Image (tube, rainbow, N blue to C red; front, side, top):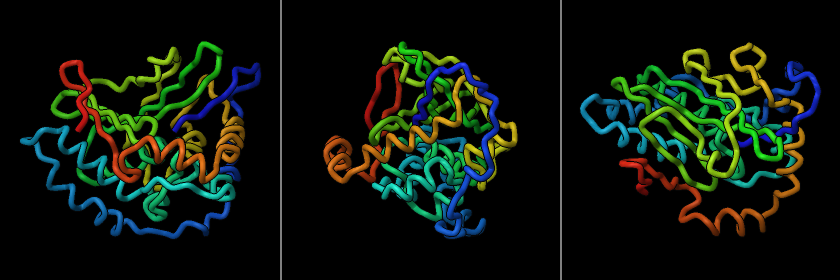
Length: 257
């Protein structure tokens, strides 16, 4: 997910209102811990020290895309639920908005990694600044395995990038620089957390991003939200809307899997 904000001389420490976290909470059904455990049970056997860890990560990414499908929502759903759903709610809903879904995928991936006995899992949040002094957020996952750092980067369209070092967004290729990097131990993130609760608990603290600009993001998404946009911009540019296109960085080259 990409969040945009402008650099204004306002207090960035403004609290995120609890009322803004969730509205119409009854719209999302409840899913229990036992059911979530079963959702990821098939991947537990793959978490082996003997296999290629990239194979496990690829299976996880494919599994996440089957559990949470990219769909076009109506504007009222965007208004009520954009950036407000926890991993539990996303798994119950089984869907995410096809534009800017990286936060949703990251929260569900973190829960999946934890349910398959993975340790040393980190939520990565990057605050990026463009040459026009505009800020945005990008989310990723980092995990340490046998002393090596691996990352999962849910990029635009259906592209997912896996690498074997610390998470660094490729958005810098577009002239954007990382001005603040936030790393959160997944042990501090519950299945019921979202970005609002993490900020309210003091687990996540932004330096440049102003939470009020989430309203501007929703406005932009709703203005661009049409069946024609989804068909022309998104579906036409991916091979299968429900399957990730995974790239693994090996020997300094991106290899499509």
